[in-house]
Amino acid sequence: MSDRKLSILIVDDELVVRDSLVHWFTEEGYDLDSASNSNDALAKLAGREFDLVIADIRMPGMDGIGLLEKIQSEQLDTSVIVMTGYASVETAIRALKHGAFDYITKPFDPDDLSVVARNALEQHRLKRENRMLRDQLTDETHAITELVGQSEAMAKVREQIETVAGVDSTVMVEGESGTGKELVARAIHRLSPRRFNPLVVVHCGALTETLIESELFGHEKGAFTGAQYRKKGKFEAAMGGTVFLDEIADISLKTQTDLLRVLQEREIVRVGGTQSVHVDFRVIAATNTNLADLVKEGRFRSDLFYRLNVFAIRLPPLRERHGDVPLLATFFLDKCSQQMNRKFTGFDRAAMDLLIAHNWPGNVRELENIVERAVVVGHEPLVRAHDLAVTRPSDGAGDLTLLTLERQHVVRVLEDFAWNQTQAAKALGIDRVTLYHKIRRFGLKPPDKAARA
Image 1 (tube, rainbow, N blue to C red):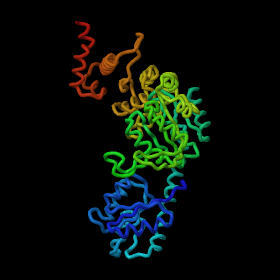
Image 2 (cartoon, rainbow, N blue to C red):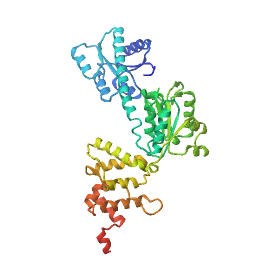
Image 3 (spheres, rainbow, N blue to C red):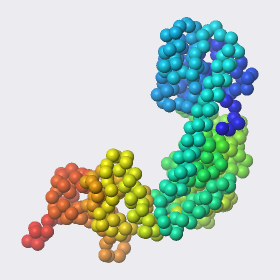
Image 4 (cartoon, rainbow, N blue to C red):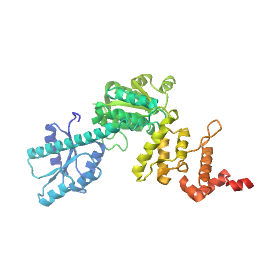
């Protein structure tokens, strides 16, 4: 665990109790916050992580037991001690039954509460470390094996991952959409000394400039409309761990400047704040764009590019490693079959030939989606060609439009089912009426009718 202060949230509707406990535990070296009711406490728990909650049972609105149940149901990673002025076996049993570490009765000796709090925090620490050790064993086992493929290109990628994982270097992962850039980032993190701390993923392309600033740097209460509480950003949440910035080319020049400052100074300032906060994390960035070209065009800062591009890993598109398609397809088939409780054992020859011949514009992600659909619509034990939403390669040159690809796929499925429209519609994942309209739209006719026309 990191050497940060352990944090405690005091929840009590009596101001004098809150102030007394905040003062007492602050003097003992803890990071304190307080709330006057359960709803306020839940809002604060949503905005940051607390190691321990000390809550009164008797409060207006949602009582302490209700708060405890909510913490358990939302699987918040915190221990809870409840306080009650009505000592009874029934109260204690209710609290412990709903997941409290312990309870203490009012009026209490602060020293007694301190002992209970230390015990709760120690148990919390041990449980967290045990969980991280279990995750580490699982992660290390699967870190590289998820990057399926025996091609020379993938062997080089795995070698690069193992080379860079042990050093605290910034990494740039390059590759088309769907090639598995996030898998590479996760593998590097799982094999690194930072594996005991979080891997925080930021999908830059999905956020506006305003949102990405708040997501990365956090914000102070009142920083903007709706900012009712202080919120930690991704950089703080990743303390001691790794931040994966996916599609880094999509961030604005202003955010690029802010990011460069963070990488240089290892400090952030929350939106709406003035105080600097120290941060410690490793950066792995990913892009499906040639950043060097963007630098030449003035759309990406050259100093940020060189700071991010310390160690580059290029993920090859699937069309450059067709020999890995059978391995990947089998891997996804086993994975999806287990998840959906199906009993597929493999692909028939025609299905595998179709997968190998496909050009895979969507790369590995497209292959996984197609296999997943085949597990849904297919009939065990083998996936057959008509289960795959893949178009047979065209003999002609040039790219095909989406409309042309759709027409060819509909024709192929109809042919596979001898123009039985009910079965074809089921294989296509549409109803019979929709298929009928597509047949009319594309001007399709069964072979016997086409011959007579």
